[in-house]
Each structure stands twice: as structure tokens, then as C-alpha cells.
Image (cartoon, rainbow, N blue to C red; front, top):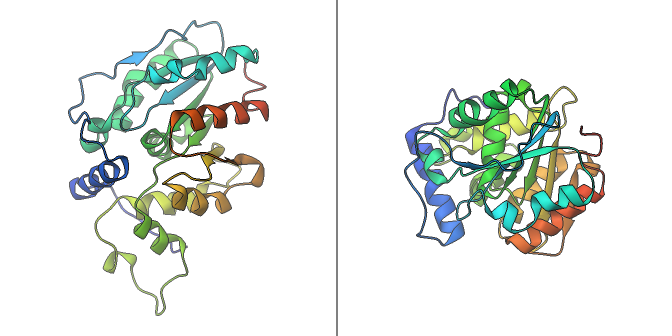
Length: 255
């Protein structure tokens, strides 16, 4: 993969992101405007443990969907010693370029102040992208990242970035429309299998509409960090994937 560097995500890039996720979701009922502070479901932040799992929802979802579909309950059923918080990070935080800063100020720093030592990010769909954007900016704050059916960019852009390098050599910016994918995938190529970086786990359904991105990311990861099962881009598949990862021993050493 070519090495690419971009200083920051532009408004044009984020508008492209919003358009992409809206097309993918087929949804018009999306929140566009962020609040001054991320709302969250923090019923699982007891402060009894040193590990905190932060859940990030998809574009049509809310923080409370994780509890509805049994993500926190799955941890308790296995006796995993970790606290949880789910943040209501909707599309507005991505369009306004606030997702990383709001996670940092409203979730991660307060969690550190409460004594949490190991912080994991678990993102479904668009929340997977948010998990990676935050980890890229604040790698030292994160113990690990779990991506469940993540949105990682448009199919055409990912195909160009992860396919054979153009010949003769040329900048991909000459052929790519504006988007966030080049920076993200250059970072993934460098960090996904780097022992010094937080581990990235990937789980997806074999009939997921975003499978083009999942299949592109999987070769960058150690085999034991990827899980695929029959299923589509829905919560019933995502909770099966979550249970599958937990049964493999994810968080088994948390305390």
C-alpha cells in the first residue's frame, strides 16, 4: 500500500463521509447536530474494576441499544471483570469533526480520573470508524479496539487504496474523490499488526453490506483477531459476533 499523509480531515471529506453512511444505511432519520457534551449510558461504570469498555453505536443507533441487545449482559454472564459505558455518538459528531475531542474530554479523561487503567473501544458500524479515529489520535489512551461490522469507507476508495499500486507511480489524490479513506487506511496499514499499537479485533457477518471493507482489513490483522460468521448488518448478528469474541477469551484477563 502506498504511504499517504494528510494533516487533517477537511469539511469536504466529512461531507463525503456523511453522504456515504446515509446511502449505506438508507436512513433519513439521522441526528446531525452534536450536543455540548456526549450523552451516555453509564449504568455500568461502578468503579469496582480497572478495565472500562466504551461502546460506540452505529449511525441509526443509540447508546442504549447495547443494553437492549445484551452486550453488557454477555460480559456479566461470563464473569468478565470490567465496567462499561455506552456513548450516544451519532453522525453529527462526525460531520462536525468533534467525535475525537468529545470522546477524549467527555469519556476517556473522566474515566482516567476515576482510576480506570485499561480502556477498550468497541464500535459497531459507524462506531467502528469512530473507535479508529480516536485510537489514531490518542493511541496511548487505548488498550485495544473491537470493530464489529465497521464502516471504514466507500467501496471504490478502499478498492483503490488496498489494490495494486498504480503504474506508473502517481498520487492517489489524482484519482480519488475527496474522502477520509487515504489517511485512515495508511494508518491501518502501519498500525494494524504493529506489536506496539493497541490490538485491533474485527468481527463481521458473511452477508454484511460492508463486507468489502472487512475483507480488505482482515489480511492486515493476525488471524486470531478476526471472526466471521453467517449474518448481515443487524444487531442480531452483532450480538452473536460479540458473544463469539468473548467466548474466544477477549477480556479474559481484565480486572
